[in-house]
Image 1 (tube, rainbow, N blue to C red):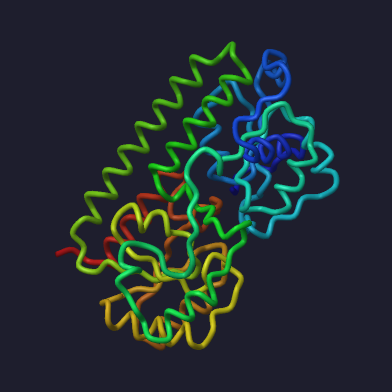
Image 2: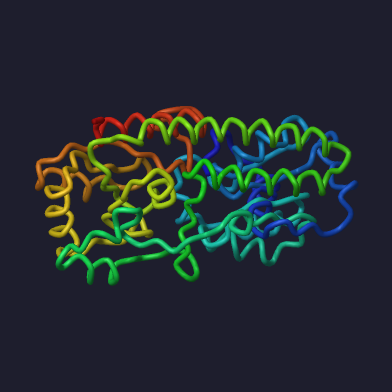
Length: 329
């Protein structure tokens, strides 16, 4: 969601819109590329959708991100000026349910092409504990606590963090590629070629994760908020989140106590925190339970603190952190 450059508000509006509504193309697409030297003017709501759109669009698109580097995407607020300019974009790519302010702005904006990433893959409801290990676990006070603290920042409790699963991210890429081709048919062949290339790279990343996480000693990992549920399910792991889906919520004393017991029972060595959210709770839990801490980046934005410069390098850094924490047989 974060972009390393300053974002013109008009472009910003474009990118945000692009992610909002799934393949809704309104208006004639041929005129869409008549801006910015023939490039399609696209607004992406936050970094993962901006990166994906840039990879697919190549030289045919001008992509602006709505969420600036260092801003926690869930907390994004859009100015009246940005909202007004959103409608100037040719296309908007967003993820409904992740950023309420973006959802509202996209709904009001008259943009030719609105792409909602949440309609391009299956969305699931996740709480504090996610993964194959969850059903088998019955942490005494934990069961009740999981139900009571499954915070969500999206309607209906759907987990928006689909980009952290390379397979789901590839499905979103295919949908965005199709939307761009429809909005700018003159360059459809290039969009298709670039989409195929990105999907192939994501397939390779999926294989790397599957191979590295297949035979780990431990299968449970603790994070500050439940961003890695799809990843955990994909690779046979269980994510135990301190704060549920909402990175700003406060865990109950019962939840902390439950996590301490679970960490000991399941051989957990590390509590993961992230760069855009306070690490205080994670470090307190780790200290009380004699555990290590490390960064597992939810990739909601790239900053100078990120362990990588783009989606793929940060995902590989995450894989290294996971395999180190989980150990190998």
